[in-house]
Image (tube, rainbow, N blue to C red):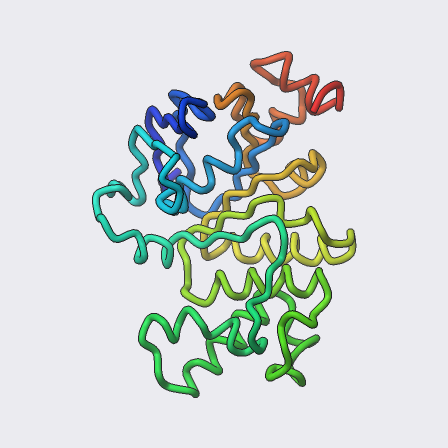
Length: 251
């Protein structure tokens, strides 16, 4: 399979606290890779490294190499362009305090798009991909903050899609939404996988099982298991800790 991201000897520290150490991981094109593990195992920190959200915290030190299509993502001092290629959806849905349309077209406008017809087309396409268009098409000029939690979560996905990312990172996207909406979003992700790579952090074991092509188990800043889902959830594990976590014996 073609590699989309290569992570080599990644080490992440918050001050003197090491949260990821000597992590190596290849992520393939057009796959959904699920990352599971207990709290404070380094999962979210790994995601933040992928699009250099770590740049915004001076207390974080990142060492190692992350390649995107063979190019070092740390080579360019300006990380803005990288975030157009690698989108991020945070755990809690946050609609920007503006209209639904303005939320989705914000990034393209910032990127220089001025044509209203083109912006409308981008907005409609992204809202459809996020399974939200039918619910909001008649109130696009309404405040995004008045949407339900599940709708705001899908709006954040639409917003992330508005700059046509090659990789979409999701950090516990279902933490604050109902099961029905979660299933809608999962169906959306299965479709999006045809056009992009998806890196998904989840604490819901069944979600990793349903969605992932592969699943990685993180513990104490290291990947202790990584395999196709048929192996991870079929009992072919390297670590007893992974088995115990999947069975709910700790977390």
